[in-house]
Amino acid sequence: MTATLDRLESTIAARRGADPESSYVAKLNARGMPKIAQKLGEEAVETVIAAMRGDKAELTGEAADLLFHLMVLLGASGVPIADVMAELDRREGVSGIAEKNSRPKD
Ligand SMILES: N=c1c2ncn([C@@H]3O[C@H](COP(=O)(O)OP(=O)(O)OP(=O)(O)O)[C@@H](O)[C@H]3O)c2ncn1[C@@H]1O[C@H](COP(=O)(O)O)[C@@H](O)[C@H]1O
Image 1: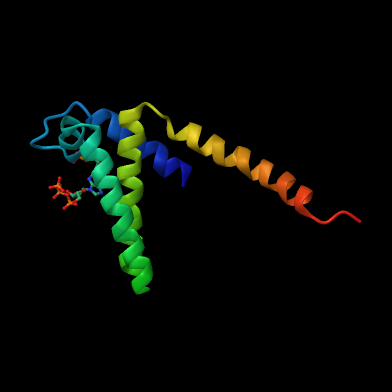
Image 2 (image 1 turned 120 degrees about the vertical axis):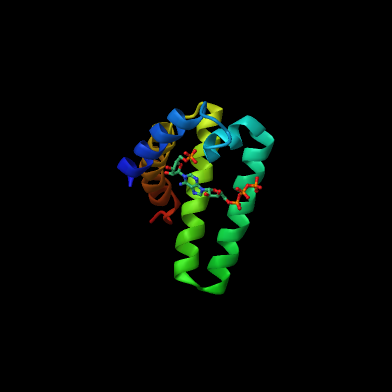
């Protein structure tokens, strides 16, 4: 999964300055953060609707759209996907401790 996202991150970075007529990534970036954020929100809603319908094929497609648009937003914001992964890894460690602390004491 990480390799796929790393590759996508590189592709998005390479396409950002391309011709907006021929590149969707360039077109979105040219329209700025409000448009990128709006698209991410739309894809999130479409993902939720697909999940509620219980259609796994539709959900798979919408989830891919959602992840792609999140990657575009992170790229435009200068946040590397490696930082997001590192935060998730950190939380994995933290949640173990939180779980332990939430257990009733003898
Ligand atoms: N993964 C994707 C990807 N997923 C979805 N999309 C595009 O996201 C758009 C979403 O469709 P919508 O109808 O919601 O959007 P729209 O009508 O084009 O835009 P609006 O009018 O809503 O602003 C479609 O144009 C899809 O083609 C993607 N476009 C590009 N990629 C990746 O990005 C790479 C670079 O793409 P280009 O920048 O186009 O070269 C590609 O090789 C792919 O790997």
